[in-house]
Image 1: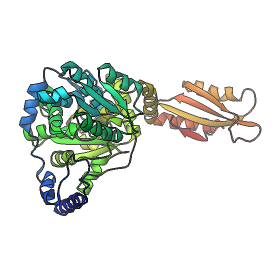
Image 2: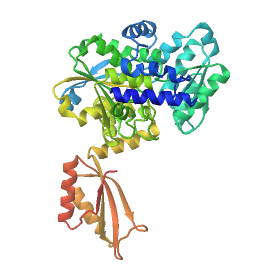
Image 3: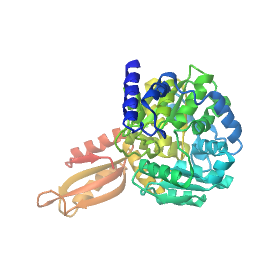
Image 4: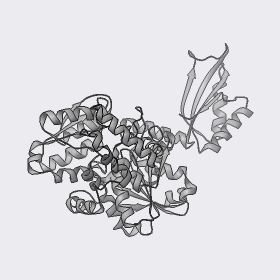
Length: 452
């Protein structure tokens, strides 16, 4: 660790001498100050403490919703551990982001409030800042990527914020937000690289310790993107209960913090996409890296099918509507059952702002991952009654047919044959294998058996 720290120190110094600064620090540091800057990594940030979170709670507790902690009997049985959920998706704007945004806004001086604020976000942070600026009668300007779903743009505008669309990523939007902040004198509200914002998110940890259901908890599993949420929660809980395990979960498509921890320094990954778009953060910030390194015990990952399956399970079993980031803790628990077996585990459902235009596709993907929807492509003779014979097999097995498609124009089938795809409602992976066997026995071997 010391060697990696010294390497990082040298790189800060080299960067400073070239006049580049480092990463997204908002100030230039000299080579002489590089050693003090690296104390962030070796001492674990003195910019935020448990007391800061206590103060944040006093400031915001009567202006945000105290979300419930609920126990799930069904998912506890499925996961093999006591499974509880902290439902931050029930906040007014649908995510935990309100806590940090409000704490930051309340901390501003009278003169800063008069200037107004600016933020960059593709969704949750934007809506949180806009909503509480409206409540506090502050001017808000939000920069969002051009590909942001229309519903999120409209929601942010409906809270009274001025919205500008720029670039293809949140990083692009952030770059413009910093420029506009300097030009117009607006206060920039960063979604996670800010001790005051982190303290606000940490109030979730305080609320957890006030819950009778949380007594005896062994682990808290939290979505991990930029690290603002898990940093605040982990700091508070670790100070109160040192033995508690804090586990972060990232999308396997963009494991920026996990890779940073492995390398002992913040990294910057290429662009990536995920169902858990709220935590697809490619650039790790030094402040958050330090806190995660100090307080978080382990970082896991979940792939797209696992995330989709978790969204589906929460919706179907507990009637909880969650976005990908909110479902990712459950995805990780299901993927690592042996590690959580018999323990009491709290998952943070960080938000529920899922785009309804893609919810259907996510549900279908989740059904496929669970083996509850499958597509079979068969080659049959191009004669009257051939398809009926196949459908009779399906009927005898009492399987519901969701879709039938003839592949006439694009099919590679030889003359006299045609390929047909059947999309079936199945009862699990074992059931899919049973269907394949029956079709094989009837002389219709499926050439392809793919989830949707």
